Length: 356
Ligand code: NAD
Image 1 (cartoon, helix red, strand yellow):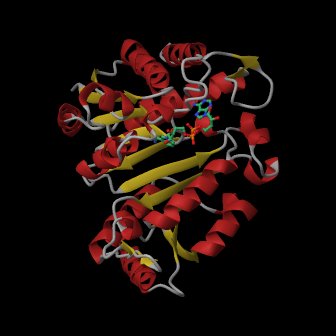
Image 2: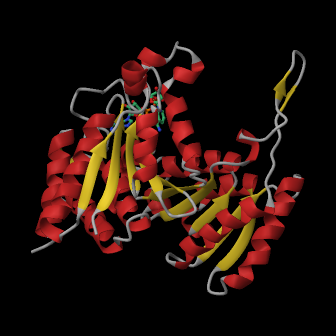
Image 3: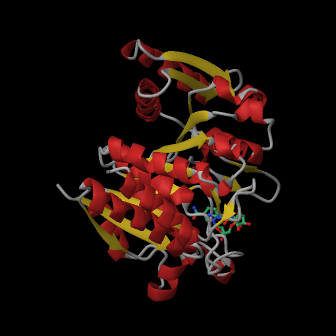
């Protein structure tokens, strides 16, 4: 069976880094029999320029038809002053909601070679491998009523039992195939919505006797993430808390060019993207780090395409090029300075070599 993959390069460094991930998928096809068809479509500022819409109907159609989507990045100074609905980020928000991508997976994994890049002491982060699971389509970012008046403003933070159950089940399932520990993060000492969240997660625990469930208040979780991050395996939380905690966790690894992410729907289809943006300051210079996008492609293989063994091959190839000392400009720690395409070539070569 051939997997249908939609490539959405976007703006800025997006086309450069997606091209390198595509190169690695091609290497898997040549050497490991990975069968896929890739189509490319416009999103973000590039789509606004070409079609007057950051998410054209033609792109949505291809996205709904694909088994998985590999996304680069969107945005840039060129589109910052235009009407809100035409701005690049509207394209990303809309595709997330069109595809009902409610589960956002943000791993924070520190490669041993890069332990010096973290703002924390190397011994606190060496070997770090945690996963933050953020609910992405509910909570305070979408709740109503919401209003801004002259002298006050308010938002609403709703969660239904069904919404909590579907993200919590994802959390238990992910913990089950990792370290078997799930920490649910809320603010149940203050918020009613968190009380319901905690009761709902607790009620599911019986279905996953092999997973150890714990609960933590969000303020403590933020503190623990910088005090002793390795205590965690999987954290599951709502949209607002997850937004903040996942950025803290990302920074523990010190290198924005290394971090992949996935956003999945109930059927396991998903959109995979690096955590970083379109980096307009280095676009077109050939120095962007493609590894976050290549690692996003590995997540795509594992979580949407059922090709976990091939995901391992790609991740191992990334580990090897780092161990060989290859470094794009954003990664600290000496080594051999390489360009975007040289890094992609090196990973693709390791992938090919793994077949021999
Ligand atoms: P950014 O992540 O694009 O860049 C922050 C810094 O990190 C820059 O100095 C950049 O050069 C560097 N950087 C980022 N990715 C890198 C990589 N792969 N290799 C080497 N260095 C890298 O964030 P920003 O500057 O705040 O935003 C720039 C644009 O990106 C804005 O238009 C913003 O709206 C957009 N953005 C898009 C997304 C997305 O597409 N999901 C996410 C965040 C920001």
